[in-house]
Structures are given as C-alpha cells and as structure tokens.
Length: 264
Image 1 (cartoon, rainbow, N blue to C red):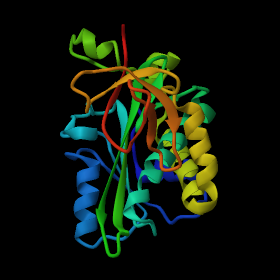
Image 2 (cartoon, rainbow, N blue to C red):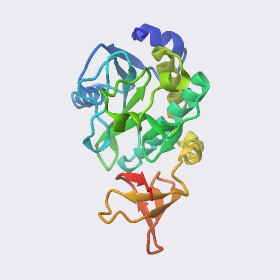
Image 3 (cartoon, rainbow, N blue to C red):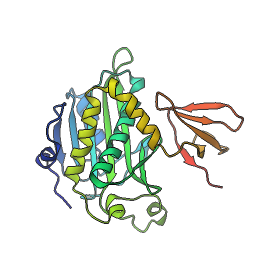
C-alpha cells in the first residue's frame, strides 16, 4: 500500500482557497478525537489530520469503525465555520457529496448516500462520515470536526460473514489498488471549493445530496420506533432532515437517529 505523507498529498492537491495544514501520523486512537482535543486547546482552523491506522476509530451513535493499518483513509478536518450550530449538518452533507464526487472523478465509481452520513456502492457500505462540534456564543459553532473513514484496500472481516455482506472497499469494487494520497487530495479539493463560499454552494450541494440519497421512495424502520413499523421515505428537507410518512398517514422529520431499509 502507498505511503502517506503530507508532501504526497500536497503534490496532488495543488492550489486551494484554504490554507490547509496537512498532518499525517502513523497511528492514533481517533483523528476526530485528536482534533477535538486540539480545538479545545486553542488550535486554529483548516487542520487536516490523516492517520494510517486508528486504534479506536468511531462512527455515529458510539459505534466502532474498523481502521486497519495501510488499508483505508482515516482523516478529519478541523473547521471554525461562521455557522449556527443547528446548520452544521450542512458540513456532513457537503462531505458526503465531496467524497462521492472525488470517487466518481478519480475512480469512475458511482457512490450513493444513505442518510445521513454513509456512502454505499452496490448496496454495501464504503465510507462513513462523523461530524462533531462544540457550541460557542449565541448559538454559533465554536468549532466543527468532520471525520471521513473510507475503505480502500481489501477488508479482512475476520471470518465475520455478516460484516462481509454489508461492507466493501475500493479495491474490491475496482479490482485494483487506489493511491490514497491522490484520493485524499481529490476529496480535499472538492471540499475546498464548497467551503470557499458555503452559502452560494450549499443549494447545489443539497440538490446533489438528494439525487444520490437512495432511501427516497423506500420503506424503512426507525431506531426510535420499538414496534418497527414501516415508514415511507419522502426525501430530504432544506436542513438535511429526513422526511418520512408515518403508518397513520402523517409526516415526520428526522434530524438524527438511524433508519434501516425494511425487509419483508
């Protein structure tokens, strides 16, 4: 597998509107955890931390994220956006679309989005995104950390057939290896152009998110519904909330939580 260095990423990235500060470490517990700690200690913005291996990679709802050495992209961005905390979901939307765009341009791969933060290829999970932030003054975000975990090399599921059935990697999908530094640069380039003017670029980003979000029109169950009744997904609203029709014919907007495609 390729060797990750700031120089290797920078040579593929070229000129950007943001002065990204690239940091690469061989191992850490979690890139999100490290940047959150740095932010609370007074670090500035535009820091990109990449790890070759995470010992305690995290996903949403406290789940672990498998992060073996040399096999994936584990990166986080430390941002200090001028955004109300309630709108920080915009950054999750943008990150998902930017990863999907980079995969399309660099790998020729069509990636779909599962609300709110996962990318899928061929019905299997390829990438997860975890956005975490801290509230500042007057309901504004003090800082936001956007974490991206992307399976690149072949996965060793340790004989876990259930896990192997639901996850995939770029090497498995493409039948070849992918240069991680080049892909990291492609993701950063896409995100850089969005972040340069979030207000102007957000409508197009949200529209692309909606087009790629494959749950629309499907029946799902909600993690908050113990009865596991079927809810029909209607789409995504302006705040990236999931619109669903309830079994009694009403409508519900989900801002967080987990949904699963309903199987008969």
